[in-house]
Length: 314
Image (cartoon, rainbow, N blue to C red):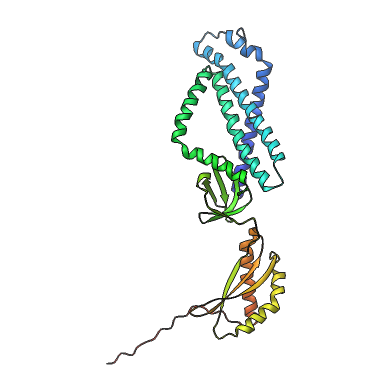
């Protein structure tokens, strides 16, 4: 984590340096606009006597203009994303919509920026856009899965079935929804692992955040134990267990005999909690039940192997 923090800090510093550099170039470009762009400007008319340096001077205005476009693009994205983050907040649904809108705006702004930069360098933008339209049609026919991902992402957000912050299980993988993009959805599990799923592949999933969860714990006792005594001990100490596990919203409850195993009578216990606390409540319940059983002499059996030796006759 510390190494990631250092890398993030270094990346932020580098980004700030580039932004300051771009800002300086933009200001200079505006101040010396005539020298840069006018046909009789210094960069267009000055002769160094060396053809190579003359060619460098001629393209300086284009380089400066391209940097100015990049700076304005980054500034617009920063302002727009900031405004959207302030508008779409407070609720998971609004945050999810805000992230999707951010993704769409970024794509549109960068496309416009690239076209503007290409125009600065003398490319025929009209022909480029017309060609891009035909190319998009051709590519679209071969990239139906990408289009399906985009459409599925829009429907996921609009339907409200999946929101940022939800705990969901997709294809057996459980995690928190970190972001719903225009093409894929990003999940992160309790250990920090990240899974990226294409939106069009998210057909069946379990959203576990809409209601409280009910973790269960199964503990085995010996067949020789008095089941009624065990049940009475639990009922007498249920409030104590709840005090020691404050994440429990309701319970814990004794749910009865879950199974008659080969070497134990398995008892099931459960409690209501928030989905984010599911595993912690489950672990804490196991701990408190083990302590309770130990304090009251309730034996929990463990696997045993009986080996019989057969005497060999001489």
